[in-house]
Image (cartoon, rainbow, N blue to C red):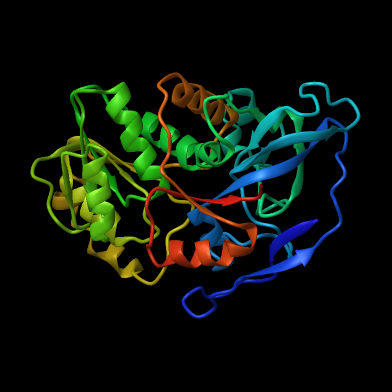
Length: 342
């Protein structure tokens, strides 16, 4: 099968072709697994973290990609949940132990044996993949394959982040960074919390314009003060400075939710500039988001289908994966980037 593989850590500022096009053996589904013929795979900032070594794969080469949509081609022994031809999605959560205290509570995202699609096992920048039947999600008919792909991570992790803010209708939410996840959160808030106001902080003028098009009440630079105090803020950026700036904009008792698997180190001195009275006093909170659980994916897919709302998508071929990644690194984003393998 055709695949784009990562063979080692590299710096995307200098290496514009981190992935290599190769032919690989077709995977064979194991017990309780399904073989999926991939039709679309979203391109996520987490792939940049893998490529640049902030969350490196344990083994190379690896096929990245964890927003996978395709159709079941075959079922392994004891796999009866899906049938050949079923359309399914595979998210960042590829597997968990199912036995630990976190798994028993439905918090598989915190499982010590959590394995990530496209990092710990081969992912979706390829024609085929395998996954346990329990971690393959039915895709609602309302979405095309390319529309569904970003919902599996950008959407699901955005949904988890929004739940963790505790946002109530009528409150004010900030979004720092406005890529795939941010634009889906904004769409979700507008439908579920019609009286809530969304304020967007983004370095790219085009992202700020896009946010206003989608219904943000205000959009400014990352270091611009919000017109008024915010009840909660979701940070989706890869760096530290927006965290410090966001804390300034929180009301007393406000909560900052950091939706990032890692933060780049080049501006880590920003953390040393935390001023307790300015940034943290008055019972402000900081909460991180770790991965997604199956519940996040299942619930978000159903919510998005019921509304329904659709992501904005830029499409690329499998062979154009490097181009999509470089554009993501350089901040050339409008909505979500998706590889179309059909």
